[in-house]
Each structure stands twice: as structure tokens, then as C-alpha cells.
Length: 417
Image (cartoon, rainbow, N blue to C red; front, side, top):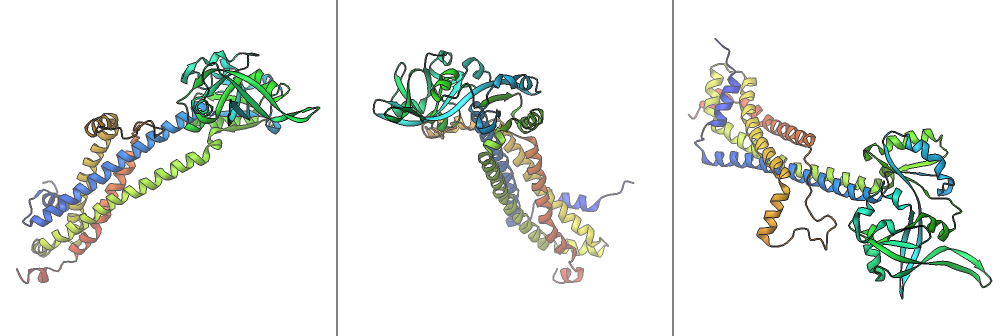
């Protein structure tokens, strides 16, 4: 005859049985719902934060370089010399020289600061997606000696510039004249406007000109600020930067996006962790309901406990009975919440569209927010961690009531029965 696991059998029956005390049933249901809601919200919110983080990272990396190779003093004299070493580096799928300087741009009476980037259009298109985000004009119209410029949409709006306008760039490096030190000026023709790439500050401050025009404007004597590299996997930036540093024998300085934007992405990660911890308090609060339910069940079942103790059931097995009952409630809530959270994360766009249709307005209007949708990325590692910790909390919540049940004295419990 098969051996019966009494704690499992009795605990399961207690979990399934309808209770004589309706209040206990109500509290039990609330505890299960509390765990389910906590797990559901946690999986949904963490998935949304994952999506937002990836969206911001992707848009920033559309403009910011994955890896930058530069020289002493921030300049590279003969950049063509180092291209063979870069081209043979595993993981590098594109490279382009650039000059990055500051200056003033003006049109009529409007003047504002700008980051001026000198590029080779054909090479730049291999490492960034600016050419794919042109609102007007064509990025390839940046031609040597033509003194054309492509402005960010925000920058163009600041000075009121449009296609074909002649804007004046003022270099911070002055030039000596008989009248003294005078600023260096050059007029450029607006041949394009880009937008919708990277955070708003990129559109509001960045302008592109041809590399040779930048060399003349800033008198760099043929030197460039460095080489911008595009990687097949941006997450390998640190590794590839270290390998290139060894390859160049520290003659050139190699930086990567994880260092350039580490403060921003660290803030995102800290925020994600804090939200994770805060939302887990919902599950912890629900676990208190499990404690309350089990304490009331122990009180309600004192006579049953006394009889089983009289028949020889050990205190450890009594703990097992109520442990099974509490964990069952926590597991049911966790499974229901996990299923709801997974479905929410996988269908978030449809849910948001439905909610916006019912409410009649956008939750994230494009005129206000940088990211205008609710991107969600479901990571199964997050789901496993959330489900595991939720069940562990449910287990811990059962220990005190189970221990109290195991201490019940049969004679005391049956005195008034």
C-alpha cells in the first residue's frame, strides 16, 4: 500500500474546502488576489521599463558613436593610417572620420550655439542613421567645397532657417587681421533638415557639414577629431574598445558609449531596481493577508488539530499541513498574476490603443513626450525571478502560523468542545 503524505493531503483539502466561516474565505480570496495583482503589476511595469530603456538606448546610439578612436589632444593627424587596424577588428561593421567642434550659427538677428560635425556623407551613413531621418532635403548634398549644411529640426526652428537659406557659422577660433583678432565666419546653404533621432537636445543643437569644409572652417590642417565606429553588437563596446587599445599600443585613445553615457544609463538601471523593490512591497503586503488567513484557520481548526495530535500526528507534520495551505494560496496568486503580466506585456500596444480609444486622448502625446508609445520587452529571466521571489515570500508567510498550529495542546483545545 502506497504511503500517504498526510501534510500534503490534509493541506490540499483545507485549501480546496469551503469554509464555514465566510470571513476567513473572504480574507483568503483577498490574499490570493493581492499576490496576483502584485505579480501582474510587477511583470508589466518591469517589461515597460525594459522597453523604454531599450528605446532610449537605441535612439541615443543612432546619433552617439558605439566606439570612438581619437588621438593626443583630441585630434588624429593621419586617420587613414589606422583604418586597416579598425577594418580587421572583429565586431566592427563601419567606420567614419569626423570633426566635432562648437560654434555659433546665425540667420538675420537670430543667433544660437551649435555642435558642428564635419563628416563624409557616404561614410557617415554606414555608422549612423541621420540620412534615414531627413525631414527635408538630402544628406548626400553635403559636398566638398559647396559649403552646404544639414541642420537639426530644433536648431532650424530656433533661428527660423529653411531650405535654401544662407546661415552664418562663427568659429570660436579667431583669426589675426590688421584690425586685431576677428572671429572666423563662413556662410553655409541649408540643404537639409533632420529630426526624430536621439533625444531632443540632438535635434536642437547638432548640424552637419562636409568634413573638408569643417577642416577649412576650423583650420585643423587636415586633422580630424577621430574615427567613429559602428559595431554589430553595441553591448560588446567595452570588449572591442579594450582590444583596440591593445592593438594601438595605447598610441590612440579608444572610448565607447558605455562610458560616454554611463550616468544616464546608470540612472535608468537604478530607477528600474527601485521600482522593482517598491512593487515587491505589494506582494509582501499580500503575504500579510496569507498570515492573517492562516492564523484564523488555525483558530478555526483547533478541534481538528487537537484530535489529530491525540492520534499521534507530530508537530512537524502540523507545520507541513498549514505550510502546504499557505503556499498553495501564494502559488495560485503567483501563477494567475504571472499569466496576466505576460499577456499584458505581450499585448501592451493593443491594450494602450484600446484604452486611448475609450478615453479619447493620447496617454503620451507626441508634443510633450520624447517616447510616444509604450514599448515593452518581456524578459523571461525577470519573470522567473519575480515568480520565484513571490513563492518564497508566500513560504515565509506560512512559518509563524504553522509554528503556532504545531504548539496547540490537545487538552486545552478540546476543553470547551
